[in-house]
Length: 255
Image: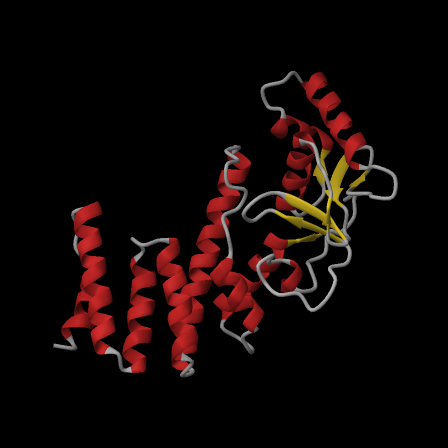
């Protein structure tokens, strides 16, 4: 298929803005978590709203995409000829001299391969955490714990879908990291991962179970019971339901 192959970022330090840097940030970096931002060698690059939507869409697609598909998605309420004209205008503004952001053929578009995207590195880390193989990169743990929402305030269907997809991947990764770290005796880190999962979705039982298991593995029975009671109150108040029998059995075994 025409178009360039998109590569993953090389380091999570370039993917998570809140992480400390080993030195100057070089190259092009596209940030989609928390807010849209594009930097070149650490300097912010101004991008029009239409250009932001083109870059974000291509970054989320992560593969060559037809021009008509991009135009039809981003300008869905516009006649096709006008949508294609809008796309051409946005591309002209994006590919300014000395700063090529989009690779284009007559039929397809893709994000320029030299652009590092924060979301891709975190998705890669989430998948690796779920597989539970190999050593755990501390930067992956930090990235998972600190990750922000994908493009908050954007309500396009294609953004909403990817936002929920990343949220689920991150939650599963945090739970997996919590369990694995507790099994390895890294209790402080395990509890940190569990707390991050609970903060991301307070009603999610699998997150609570992972955190409670970490407390129990550390020997903190009181913390485990307090966490369970807090969760039970929240469920009753928000949904008028009780925790599952599986979680109830975990706590009953302590009494």
